[in-house]
Each structure stands twice: as C-alpha cells, then as structure tokens.
Image 1: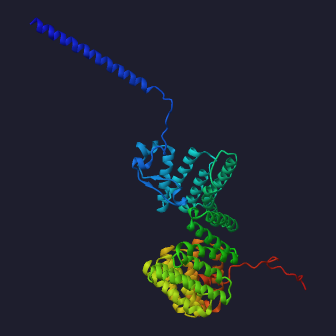
Image 2 (image 1 turned 90 degrees about the vertical axis):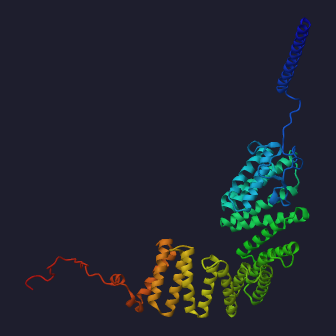
Image 3 (image 1 turned 45 degrees about the vertical axis):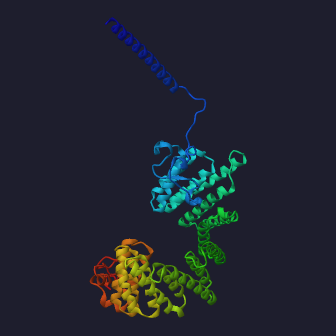
Length: 503
C-alpha cells in the first residue's frame, strides 16, 4: 500500500510538474504573440487594387475597347471587391472603378443618378492622382457629358467642360516640368469629348457661333485620332462630330462647309459600317437638305435622289411597315412641298407617313400631329378647303389631349380653321374659331403678348365689316352703340345773351 501510495504520489507530482511546464510554455507563447501585435514591421504593405488581381481572386471583370465607354479601366461587379473589401472601406482605386461602372449603367438606362456617380468619380480621381492630372480632366469631361445628357443642364455642363480644359492645361505644364508622364494619345479622347460637349451646351444656350468653333476644334482632334491608327479611332464619335458640325454650318448659311462635313461623314460611315448600313440614312437626309438649300432645279433633283437612297435603305433594313420608313416618308414629303409641281408626291408620302404613325403611335402623338398639320397646309394650297377643315378638327382635338386645353398648339389649329372659313366667306364660323383661338392665347401667353394682340386686332377688323354686323353678340352691339349720357360743355352760363337789352 505504501508502494502504491508513493507511486501514485510520484505520478501526481510528475503530472503537476508537466502541467506547470505546459502552463509556462503557453504563457510564454501568448506573451510572444502579444509582443508581435505591437511590433511594427520594417516594410508596411498597403493593399491596392493592383495587388489583388481579379484573375487570381476570381472576380468577374468587364473590359471595354472604347475609352468613352470604359474609361480604360477594369470594373468589378456590385459587391465583388478584392480580398473581402467592403464598399465603404475599399481603397479609392476600387471605389473609382465601381462608381465608373455604375455611372455607365445609369447612363445607358437614362437614369440621372449617373450624375451623382460622376461627381464621386471626380472626387476620387482628385484623391488618387491630384489636382493637375490629366485623368482628373477626363473625369470632369465625363461629368459634363452626364449633366448635359442626363439632366439637360447646359450651363453646368459648360462649366465642367471648362474645368476639364483648365486641368489639361495645368497637366501639360506639369508634364513639361517632368513631374507627369503621358502620351498625347491618352488626352486626345478627353479633348474630343470636352469640345464636343462644349459645342452641344453652347447650342442649347443659343450661342451658335461659339458652338461652331467648339465643334471645329473637336473635328480637328478627331482627325488627329484617326491618323494615330485603328487602335485609337472612334468612328461613332467622329460621325457625331461631323454631323453636328454640318448642321450648325447649315444653320449659319455656310452651305459649302456643311456639304463638306456631310460628305466626310458619308465616307466614314461607308468605310466602317458598309455601303448599305442604317447609319447612312441620316447622312443622306442631311446631304439632301444641304443640296436643296441652293434652290435651283439641279440641286433639288440631287436632293431627291439622296432622299430616295435613304428611303430605300430604310425599307430594306427595317421593313416597309416600320417607324423608320414613316420618318423617312415624312422627310421625303417635306422635301417635295417646296415644289408646286410635286404636291401630289408630297401628299402621297404624307398620307403614307400618317398611316404608319397612326398604326404604331396612335393619333395622340407629336409625330402624327405634325404630319397631319403639314397635310392640312398642302390641302389648303391645293384648294381642298373642306378636307383641310375636317382634318384640322381631329388635329385640334388631339392637341388638346397631348398639349392641354388651353394650349398654343390647339390655338394654332383653331386659327387655321377660322382663316379657312374667312376665306370661304363664312364670317360667323370664322369669328367663332378665331375668338376661341384668342381666348386660348390669352390664357397661355397673356393679353399683352404680340400674338394675342394681333389676334385681337384681326377679330376687331372682322367685326367692323358689314357682313359681320348681323352676327354680333349683344355685348358687341352695346360697345358699338353711341354714348347718350354725355354732357355738352358750355363756355357761357345758361341764359346768357351777347345781345344787349333794349336793342
């Protein structure tokens, strides 16, 4: 028993010594671990977007070819950030890529939240690259485009495009000092977009001359991009610049320059999209408009051929029963309205366009109303006055639905019907519709507006005619009735005689 007790005691003592040894070693390890927590390593590694490659971490990546569409960046899907980054705590580079992608998605869907994301992109770009970096100019140009396209704020877009230009000038100065390195091919897309947005904003602000200058600068930059090779070209943007520059030149009566721009656009479209592509339709129509502005017979014939080419492409690409063919038919009809000998062709194309508009968009649509108005004017020129009045009655009803009652557009229809009845000698009905048009103009524009005053003057002249006397209302007759309460003025007192008494 003593041996057993001693053996048990020795075993217990040995176990206690082992446990003390283990406890001491555990305490030592925990102490070393605590010490390691507060030891600063010689090299501190800061995580960045480039350290966690999307390929290695299994993150879905979107790559785009055009700088205008992708900003030359890889973008992560929503919530898929490298190495467990949370969106609010991710590095600025990762946040910038995410907001760029989100801004593009919003812009493609027509959502004005793209503006807010572009503002965030500007702030993050300034944090990452500084105040005088060319990428900040790129962010400003994208922000100006978002303001113009998503919110229609031309003045704000012009301000941010100017900011992009200022940053580019500062970046060029920094580059000459050797503190920034970039190629001209990097900044050319930024300059192109910047001048393009400037021109569009100036057109919205009615500064046609400044807009033309901005578009000319954008065209020069676009031409330089084209000379750099296929990798740096953006044919879609070049087409946009050439087309809008041609339209502005046509608006400022520079027909020769407009034709030159449209012909260049035609060459670009045929080169990149093919000789029968749908991109040629607006180019042929613009060329025809420029040719027709000369006014001579040869120019009108060339314009008709160009419009027919556009019409044939519309039929082949979209089908004869499509909205594109309706739009093309309307353009064809408008081109024939200037020639009195081609009024039948104009009426045919207008009726075809109205039929397709009615089928696809219905009677209460701006395109349908516009085509019916043009057909009414053609019917008046052709002498079909009753048909024109019947058509305008339906148009006036549609205008009250689309534009409201009262509205300027509905007043124009009633004025046209009143003019037709006045021409027919039906004074009573003419007065009725002209008065209705005057009341609508008074409600929408005010009684002191020029159009309202002209309408009131026309109505008063009609009421003074002998034919209108029997149609006057009781109120109008009272206005024409002479006043009978007037007091005759006397310079002498009553009963005074200049003849002396007794004579």
